[in-house]
Length: 140
Image 1: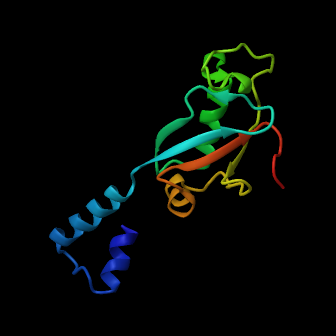
Image 2: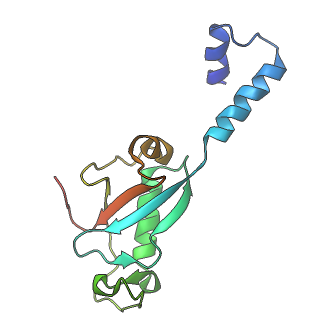
């Protein structure tokens, strides 16, 4: 609604013109696409067996934090870092994490309310957004 009002102010849409309105709404819906996230462990955090996921761009970092805590609490989804090449599942001795630190790139820690699409647009490399995760602060 706000988008339509702003566009109407600039004269692109005329009030009551539904043909132009639907094209603006369709363009906004198409803009929200899925983004490819590549998760990489830092420090003592275990590596995920599957480390690339497509997630909707309208999700927030807070949603990614919840997702990662759920994934890392499941023994079947993690591997020992020394066994990364074989993909062998190794039972770990750590307890399910209560908090996780996420980093975009190798030092930027996004806030929980940031949209994945915005981060992807700014920081993606090769069509994927790399997210580093750790149980302790890894970078200042």
